[in-house]
Length: 166
Image (tube, rainbow, N blue to C red):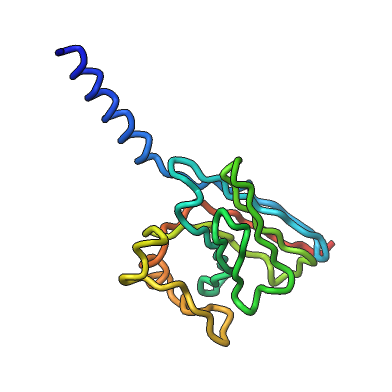
């Protein structure tokens, strides 16, 4: 009986440790030329990727955070801020727990720090207080200030991309 209790406690502690190790790991920084394309990855672990939507955000030097869009995980369905609809593509590989953001026809204005982020609440419980970001005419959406952004998301790791004219 004592041996069974020990194994039960070990199992509970182990499972708890696994679930508390939530990570989003992004691809390394890159330098690209104007006109090229880049594909960034965001590998999730420590939770079921399809339980939380993944958002992409960027910050250009000297500017506020800009919300690019979000992926309804598991459905391969993306929603973009109006400023990012033409050259930005979001895809996913659910078996690999990976989200992708591809930017085509790069320009100097695309030089930025890019973040992948996940909601801090599940899809089912967010209706109580947290709403999906609504975009405005500004490319910042409703997230003009980083303290507002923290209310909705856990930001994870960064991807820095520089566009250099040669």
